[in-house]
Image 1 (cartoon, rainbow, N blue to C red):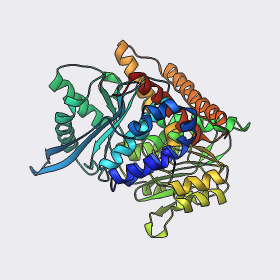
Image 2: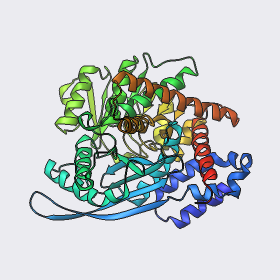
Image 3: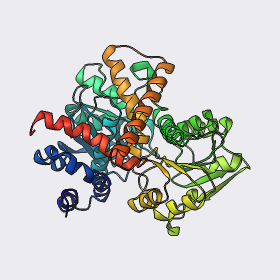
Length: 452
């Protein structure tokens, strides 16, 4: 067996039942095999063994009181994975599915994603199995304050800078930051995704979705094509999905789907700016369900989730491009084959690890342009890094300046992934190129620091 396959088996044995973490490590390690021979210094220094282990994993209880006076207890997590190139950086996820394995998978991915941005940021992730859905603002505030009562001792602008993720939007960031200021008596850039009024950055809410589309445009450019006139399947209806749709419209594409946990809408006429404004109002203000879109627009058909099918009907429509922007493992082998059969030539992942290993194999075997999450969705953390820079300078860039920097970063990420894939003999293999490019940067920094 090879070094990387031996290491993967060890990871599975020593981290039992953490299936998402195993999947993330496998996806990276199988592409790193060519680096073993090219970089014997990494082998000698134990870089491969060290990089799959987090610096530390913090687990804590979060007791809070609901509006009826009932006490609840949730689990809180922060995994500080690797700070070889900068402070730990990564989001907080509040969702019932959160467990240590999911947080470790997200933190591991974040290490390489942040390295690709060209900004000095290490990787980390955190969150809780708390579900903000259906909770009052007061309940969410009390939970966030209880969460921060423990988290504050582990974070700081030069140590660990969390941000938002699934279930943690502007409301939650505000409560978290407000309580951090209260107990630390300082106003500093310890969280990103903040409101503009108290240190946030323009373009931050849009950044992940915009970046995913910018990366797709760069992939198409290598083939002499553009997004103009192309039909696009988009999953999700949250922040990433909304701004993916917005940027697709800016570049002349035609988004035709949108979804939430209940089901999805297919709009053959296309989701235009008026319809997108309705989705934003529905999801961001009314916190309603995507089914209401089909009630309002007769051009749309709503399909309820049916897990018994073994595949997602959203990915079974004629289209040119797909933008999975909801959650992990939403495209399985059958979904990937449906995308191929329906003429999709490009996938750009707005979500983290939305395609299963079996799905990735189908995609790669059929030569589809495949922008994996750690490259394609790095726009969000890139602008988080720009927010950190602005906080440090006590200065704010204009919307145009931040957007231009985001476009430049996404071009650089694409270039690094593409050129590295070419250097390793498999031009256009973005998983290979992105993983090796991100890993090599972190590995060299770890090597320089010695055995720590």
